[in-house]
Length: 258
Image (cartoon, rainbow, N blue to C red; front, side, top):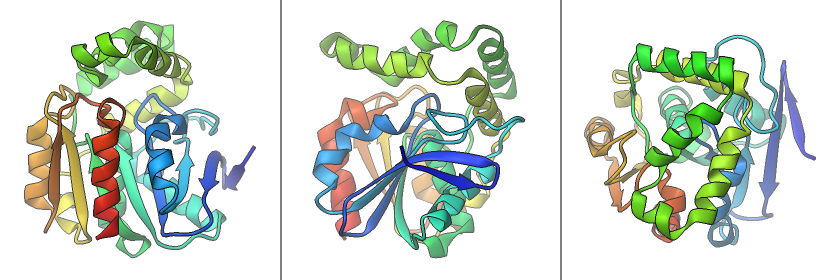
């Protein structure tokens, strides 16, 4: 299995493809790199693709202590350095998009184009995140999962694709509780509302019209504060790359080809 040792962090990753510009895909809270499977077949002919499990998720080590978005952003840079990879396109969804905001503002020379999906410069309240952290540490992710899934997918998608939803819920329930809680702390403490205006590279914001987690207003805030940013609205809730996989992938492919 491919692991990269980056200081105290052992990162699990998958690097596929031999030619084309490098594309890094960064997953949401409570998932692993397999969440990007709907994009792989269409994107692989055009790009080398680097998927990785975020710190505390999947097979990447869950280091002790609460994390920060800066720390998660530096993890991406350290992984690229460990693999001797230079500049890349970056696409992140939800927490992955928060990491993308940090990278766009602090490491613009490492990025070609930036895609921020179903994300926000700030999200939730400290009380909400503290309650979720406490539940995850005490009882695991089982009590959290059902409510999260309702926010991740619209009722129509859940009814039409029960197996896909069940697979995603199992992925969430199997996420390491301590790593999940530590990433919740990173999101709880994040406020990038002032930082986003520093992003100057080509940026696409993809968002779900029915997303209760990061609603369209959050996406509009990003597009209005990032110079030249474009927005694409999808008929989806939070995991738009799954719920509207074909449209998401085509939007991503076209933007990266510009």
